[in-house]
Length: 269
Image (cartoon, rainbow, N blue to C red; front, side):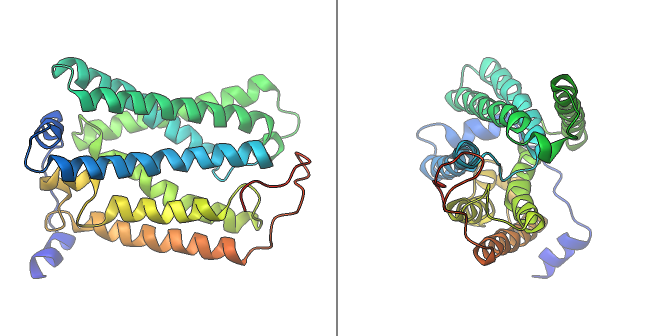
């Protein structure tokens, strides 16, 4: 306990998360291969759900659970991820996991592009002034993505983060904390649903539990509890925020029987 307290005050892990970490732990036959693969699969499955469910909400209710800037952040982060993992795939003898991660990032970028396009149509009055033209709205999105893209690359340089494994966890931090705050600010259930809030809680548990999370499984020297307690303290806060978001949702009035924007019943309650 004393060691962990010392780490909280003045100790910070200085190791790197390198492509070799992925190869070491995700090569079939490695001692911890099954453990690491399960951790990765869980993170990816819930990562896909946090965009698949919002797409369903977008089409059935014409409003999304995430603010515009968050879509831009994810687009920038995942677009960068395509090239990070594709470069590793080419440099490290076509290691299968780098190829799968690059493909996964491309899928996320596709979903984020879709959500941004829908934001420009369905959420036009929510995000911009009524007199903003299509060109001005598009430029607004492009500029936000540009700011996030260069900033995240700068963060990778400062963190010495060639695999973006150190900064990538912030995608989980934001998705489990921001939607609940947006929900509270809006004061209505439209654009959100019960199952999505349950998924947020699952994302926290999968990402921050100290026994089997993807980050620790691949880079234990950087994300282990004994060397990086701040990682797990962040997880506790994210869990609190995700549960709080669920409670806020449950306390809000039920969705209308018919969604005014679509003339249909809401698919997800």
